[in-house]
Length: 158
Image (cartoon, rainbow, N blue to C red; front, side):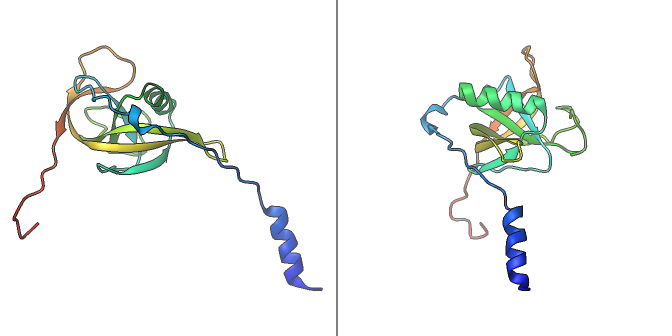
């Protein structure tokens, strides 16, 4: 018997249908300035973002999904900070998260074929955490300072 036919039959029965979702993105609606007195923070595990980058990542925590959904629906910017300890489920703003992160827009939300919720996020610029927000809010919010990137002119080392 021909093994290649058996292998093809086995491969065909293991194949799964994959569907794609269409994501409509209107980048013109993402123009709101970040609230530096109460910036909503989304913590990531093992993901550091840089300004000007667009990435997708899983939204594992209910609080992350809730924040990403609201930020996408109302087109407001959020802060993204990486956790110091990725095993921690509810990292503290002051001791569980790094102090530098990016301002970002949630430009899309989608479900992977395995049912995992994901966000498509575009980062704008950097910020530094100054402390907890003094404004009452749900979730983690921070007082932040926006940071400007400077490109040195006429610097041979650069």
